[in-house]
Length: 125
Image (tube, rainbow, N blue to C red):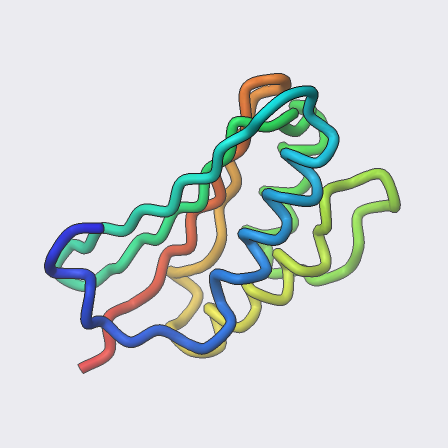
């Protein structure tokens, strides 16, 4: 974590569900050991928190649909085979309600390589 991110307040229980998703959907189904990394950095008006795993990843088709739904702020489930969309959609919705529509959740992933979930937050004074 960058030093200038350590004392920025964020909403309670914002990061925990993302870590749980990484464990459940990325690492529990992976053969062998896995890792989760949490990082944060800030710009003048933005805090970005990333939760990354080296798990099984998400297929390109599901990833594209998931990011489109998140960008549109739609909280409905994409289907039972997708990776915990409802949790990510709820986090995304909370972020947009608190900080505005320029902020939210983005998911980057490659199958069999891992997933990176980025929470983009505003910095409130």
